[in-house]
Image (cartoon, rainbow, N blue to C red; front, side):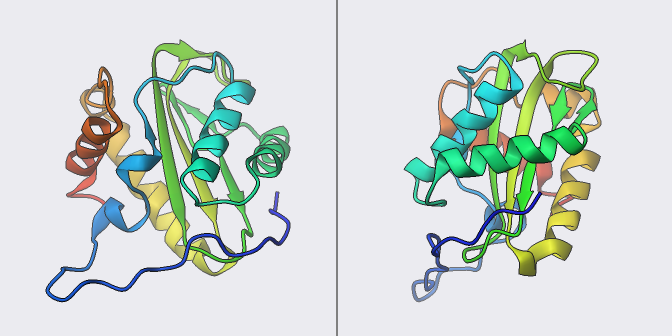
Length: 176
């Protein structure tokens, strides 16, 4: 349920002169954390893939340990909520900020605890100090993607940048 302590990997960077502060979903994620077509076929493979992405991009130190903690969380209760969505997360990560990685699958993923296939997996790493922000982010994502049209707008992209732009556009009125 809680991620064991580790060294800080992601540290807030100073804004350049004249640069506007990040708003909305941009505060929690980046294009480099988007996977437009997941390779994994089931929950465990997809969680490992998302954790590996976070490690490769410098957001976490140990992808395997993070994946193990995510799977422990899943044994308590599935984070698949229906409508092809899942919101796995790991709390208690020290250092860094609240971070979101998104992976989508056009063919669908067998996700334990879900009646149907999951097509969008929103994986969150939550520092202890960011619990309140996590709930706002989660609420905004669920509110946005409960609509079928919004979910469909995440599908079919061939680059992380295109998926990122679609996520920003879909959430801009809800997540501020």
